[in-house]
Image (cartoon, rainbow, N blue to C red; front, side):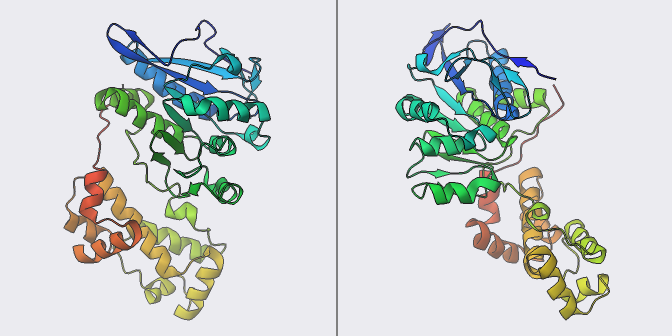
Length: 344
């Protein structure tokens, strides 16, 4: 069933006008056929929620090359507010969503981005919207990310872009790129927090029943998603047991006994079916578990190290330095836990 989304009553406005002494920030969202609807509506709901909380803070507009309705990848019909050719004043935030339509790279859209993207206060992409920014030369020399499935291609097609496939979003100066779909919400919340403060962003997060906020360098994948799932049931059960018991005995002999295999046979079969060795899988599970405890709880470093299977804080410290380039204490200071309270 097709739906209709639009703010047709809105008229073009400058990037930042002033209402009652407050700077109003224009958020211009680019639309095109084949756009991923959640790439659009997720961030728009965040900015709209902030505007509802703090009237006059944002003015959201949508525009396409022709101004005609566009059809999203899910079949939703979206009615733009305007035509991109008329949007030349430079918005405070220019948001470029992704979707199947980015594969076609409409030359008119890319040309508009190349001409007017530099005039935006902030350039933001969601998912494969980064492909359009890169095609317009707006990511050259910058660190960026996109949906994990397209990171390799983005890096191959645009070697001048420093593609980081791991984080859910990346900030590089005035340019911010995010990974697949829902990460656009995380990035939009971070931008609202930057613009209006933590309390406003927290209120919006409560209303949307999401966390404020997943740290930008949180991996796109959990360990379970990053590794292949073993075909054989005993190995799948071992994988699950490892994730549920990071502080347990996760040595190869102990895991092999759980799978009723010899240690040598188990190690070979595990790597063949999951694409990684048992040791590396355990290391990643323990690191992910420790990161989540540091992000989401007030547990001390020593307690976290025991709960995550490191045994000692020093062992966890070495693992963090090797994988993340930061100590557990430094990691926690940067991404201290946030309580979202009760749903709004």
